[in-house]
Image (cartoon, rainbow, N blue to C red; front, side, top):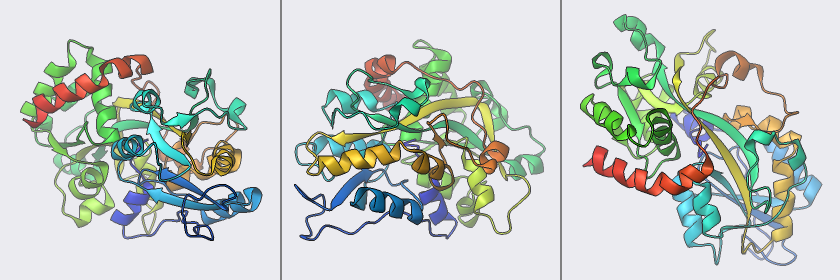
Length: 362
């Protein structure tokens, strides 16, 4: 979700180190490699994280070493991948979500490949089935999170809906990400467009602006520096008790706390959620396409799918993948998230972002 959004950045805010893949380069030091290369290179946004034993399993099973290049927020990473598509940095790109998918496909970023195990992916998350240019990997809900302790101290009921956020009681409390540079920021914008329609979302943002919404560039700054409910925000003495993040952020706050609390210190305003799906694809000019195909097969497989939740704090898309107890207890998916047809996103996204920028940032 460009998701992003997630535990790698969160763990930094908590002063912890997460497990991530940094496989060695191939023997000639060429990184992405070429014909006969023993290295497969994954390009991702900076929220990639996977367990070391899962990386080892892939490397043993496939015979390839895994190298990971993290390239900023999801929106930035997608734009850079498009600009470098003729001479890509790697073989597989992970982290393009449903808010940006059409941009990647329209620019020819990926080549066709149907990953093994794709038939186990829930139908709701499958797209581009005629060409198979991308493989669904994970899903998550972009939602406003709130600082429980702050609202309890103020004896104020936390907001539940988009409408609530524009009420005077919540003036100067909300921080959001820039919709032009951040995947969750764009997801939240699309959520408001889904809620209020083509003719109403701009008026809604005028109300948010008048109500003191704060805009920052990306999720890391919003969540770990501006949001009072996160571990990072507490250290930074943050003063905004509302933030655009994910429905899976509360479990992360529990899991990485020492000692673990009985309940999550943050909550989710379920009436503000927009569902994201993240995809991976074989880059059109991959230097090691066979290694890329092996990696996509693995990412669609059950081992990787069940490893994701507690590393990247997203939900698996395979119907047979088990979800951790912590997710069930502290971060269930929204029951009625806002959604939008990918064709509508493709048709309106750029103009909506342009209008949003003019309206909110100027």
